[in-house]
Image (cartoon, rainbow, N blue to C red):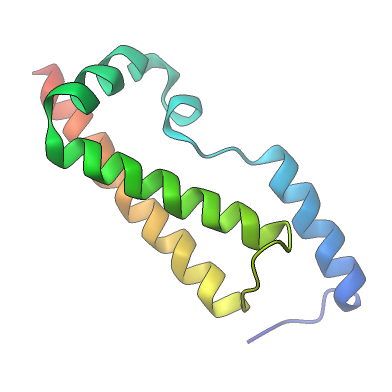
Length: 99
């Protein structure tokens, strides 16, 4: 369901602004875990697979926001929820590796 935000031009402008300022790659999200992320990518195949999937989902969201890849609001929201789920799982793995 699309809401009216001042027409498509207003909606697109707001989305583009969001795209430029919102970086969600894991190294920006968790700079304090940079070394642990590199270590886990090299030693844990499951973490590496989830990391790659997270990156692919994040890039796809940015392509949708920048109108490079077509998407309806429902698809974009589903992708954002999936990205959040992956981030939660990856973060839990990072915290477990600390112990």
